[in-house]
Image (cartoon, rainbow, N blue to C red; front, top):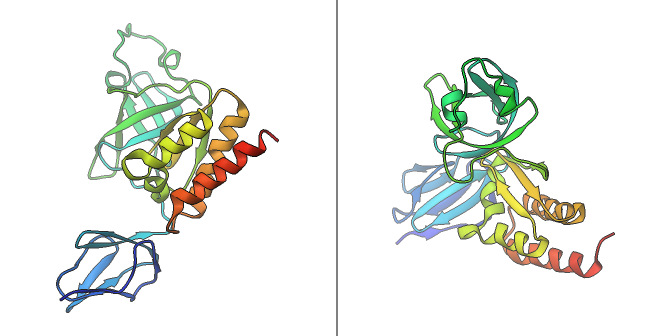
Length: 233
């Protein structure tokens, strides 16, 4: 009979015994030693059925194919855009993947996306040498107009989204903002007023700060309700 030694969202350190027996299986951030599942890093426990995983408390963004990211155009060539997605090297978006519009030979690509523009794009390929290709082909992928960008630690993104999008939907309902969450930790907010955008940004920062805590939905809901009653400052 297996024994689980920790609860979900518990903070653990390397060497902590998370579970005993063969009923539980180690996932990311954990390993098996004899009949024990042991933490391999400092992080927060996630339990999914028999799988026991440790999510790191901090870490850089590591691109994966089909991630939806928010990037900033950093340079433009005659046939490509170079996009900062918060990775060690800029991603590349080709003319073919950047637009479905007909582009005349010799056209200035900066007329479509210029340096400093933010875009929502999909990671279409990650090569063995860790070069990143982006695509703008797909629903919701576009240049972002207006609004503001806030940035969080990428590993906290699932907490901002919530189960089946519940957390981000709640923030949208309370603030009236459009919100796009990039897997790279960049989040675009667009509200009717700057105050709405500021409130949504504060809620997201609260989630990042308290991502390791249980009952996070109630914490964020209480925060939003209090701020809405207080009104604009």
